[in-house]
Length: 255
Image (cartoon, rainbow, N blue to C red; front, side, top):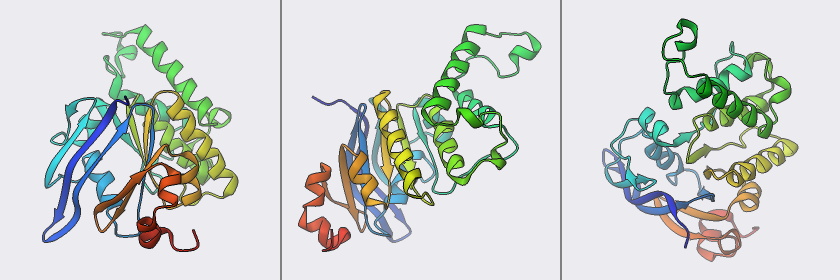
């Protein structure tokens, strides 16, 4: 039986009198890629922002590895193992690529990042483990060749992969990818598809919110479909592709 690592139960989010999410429930299991799709205004972005802690929920519950996190601020959710990316690449352009990824490791440190400079409480074994983690992430994201480049000098696609790399650096149990294919061309989407599968194969669960249906159908183990803030379907890519309710609401007859 699959083990849920992220559990969403009866999630509701209202903005004044507008119900953006209504009674939404789903699980993301260990080492699983779950897609979240729906037409514009269906509640996808509100869902991911609620899971990440940007929006306080109106009611319901969010649990990570069996512990409730819905009352925690964003940074505590990251420390517990829930990281995210954004629709627009948000990076520090003057950092090198490697240093940018190292920044993402800080949430998992037990010693202060400046401890090695001042020689107080520094753990060389921890630094070695973090360096090894960064090296692994550079390899799986194909960023190793540009690891010493300034972030502002690499391509927009590489900056999107860097955002994923930085989120991975916190050693998450679940990573939320919000529109990761935005702005990517065909061969870059193929690289992204391979990367998402690599993340899953390393044991990290992935929740991907995406408009690009070919990518969703290729990478996801299961898919949840939203419409007007409610779940209208859940199943395998094949089940979703052939679901008449989904076709009517989102995919269109051409699908």
